[in-house]
View 1: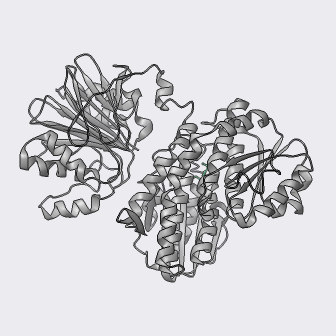
View 2: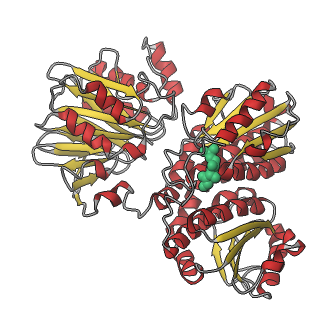
View 3: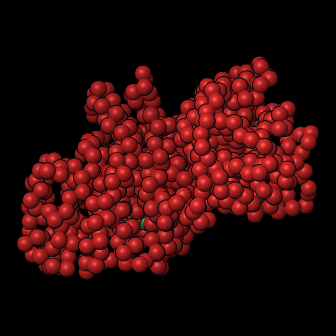
Length: 613
Ligand code: F6R
């Protein structure tokens, strides 16, 4: 994620920038920085740590100037450090840039710029942008054209704020995919990643559209399309209060994060797909030093806790199905006391959103002591897991504020599916044609998640009638039994309803004794080969009085008669459906919490990061 801000006007820029950044700290908090034009030069101050560290750093100096940009960082490329903090500048320090997003082709651009003699100072993708703008600026001396030329070469997502000491009368902003707004004041104007940053100063904003560019002066703002043609549009008057603005208008962070999944999944997936003629043809994990190891490994060992463990259980099905490689998945709190049997030919994967979970760390250290190469999947750059693992795959989901994990889970799944497919291809388990077919299917997952999010009425209606059930059981087979685990956890965490997950075939071996008219049974059914089996399970529980709810790709088939309510998810390869079927279950959990009056963002007794055993 990351938050960016910018100011041009007659006030001192520094306090305005700091104030605005405070409202964006939820977007990133591992480092922060500002760049202010002081009348002669651009003064850059940036430090590792929360915004407070930056405030302390600048408290003893006066930075004059009424033009500036600022940034609060959630690291994606390069660990949190002073040097990796934004703003980044060209070598002479005359152009400064803040960025939110991921530049997918940064490695290529960096190599090319290095060939042109540029010396890079940070590990970030953002520094490329500063040098790229400079490259064009040296050719024609026009900062606006240089920003346009540079953005034409960027692949991926960006929201940018740019200042140049030769143009002290303007601030340039541009966006593609990452959010960016322009705040319209009287004799002053602002940019920000999100509305809360400017609410203290103005309620009139432009929401920049895809690839739009804004040039801000003190007294007016000009908008342009990606080719520099003028765009005219009406400002929007914001009438939300500050707390709902922080959540982008959503009532809770959990709901906001559920809705961020299409973007988060795209950010996780796309930089790792290799395209030819706009079609994905391969997967490239630049970050893996042992990609070839996947070819000959004898076994995959996965360990994690909670939701991350559930991602591991889904992954076991994926690796075994696609790559035909055995997988062992163990919760980290068990693994650490197991005296585990490990082999140097194992691939060892730990999964942790926070990268700080005590049990996961202990399990990882055990594997490292045994001389095993550890691959970590985590969302937090600079976390302990990321520092201690041999290779790190980042989920790039952005900060997850709600305690109950949603977007971190689905992006973990995406990383694991990418790994499983790559592994299968290296092991020659399918043809190139099948590989590219699967990649094209995978590529559509984010838009299919969006389709589910676009129509929530069925789920909301069903919840309004069933939020008082005494017990809720989630059932499924194969991949769907793995998904059921996460569905049940989400519901119990945020609504405090008693929920359990069972492999559907296990029902009659015991749990069915619990089924009565106060029971809701939610079946996940995404594999056509198993529809009839699940339909029979539904009939079994229904005849014992249970209410039934089915999440499936087969709305009109096997379940039409058997279920009380069906939520259909878009068609996809059934092995990928775990990334879709969890979405209605997340929404179900969220709306149950709302109806029952619990706080979905801060469930009782739970912490976001479990750093003690
Ligand atoms: C559930 C949840 C927890 C975490 C678990 C591991 O919504 O968030 O179950 O998944 O505590 O945390 P990380 O992934 O940070 O290691």
